[in-house]
Image (cartoon, rainbow, N blue to C red; front, side):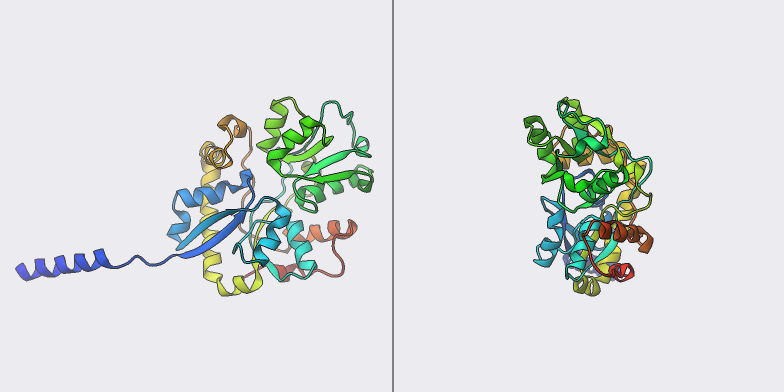
Length: 308
């Protein structure tokens, strides 16, 4: 019996000094938006760690800067909108979508066009000759708003677009630097709550449902060498997404803390449709829209843009 105790004690000591299995580290580039909820929850709740990865967060101010951050090796995975990814690839960068993220829905209330009260904008036609702030030229909201104007019979080339980040939209609208902003929650609620702008339309509702809004992307060679890490990232993200939908108040609270905004600012934010699944139908509509806007040329092999 004494020998047995000695053996068990020795085994315990061996386990105590054995180093933990090293986790794969992934640097994730992101914008300061509500859509971070599943990633933040996956970190806090240990979903990423459970799947063997450690995710380090690195802010990227503008969505349009995601491809450059990937290309420079500053991040491993970024979160460009579908339009930014497609244009980057069409421009020669060898990037792929490694996972789905968010999609358009017909009941959306998180995206909107907010106009300055004294800008005299009542109809889509009133945007002609006006200045509109967008969170990244040729990014999702910029492209979608131009498509919306086209659908309403307005020539978007007669509108001046100003690139700005979400946190600055309230200030530039109040100062009169722009006449309207294309914005998301919780920044939209902050602007309208302060009476610096009025919601004109949830214009995304007029778009087809099921289109990718944001995707997770990486350089193709990184994706090929890190397939297990990508699968782990998807799994952790999906668990974070499920938790966000099951616990919306907790999801709002963690985003409010990350964005450094008061909890009431995110109280009205709807939990987006999060899903890591991605196929050609999610990206194909973007090709025709972007071709019509002169953003991409030639054929785009959408299937080739999605990592296994």
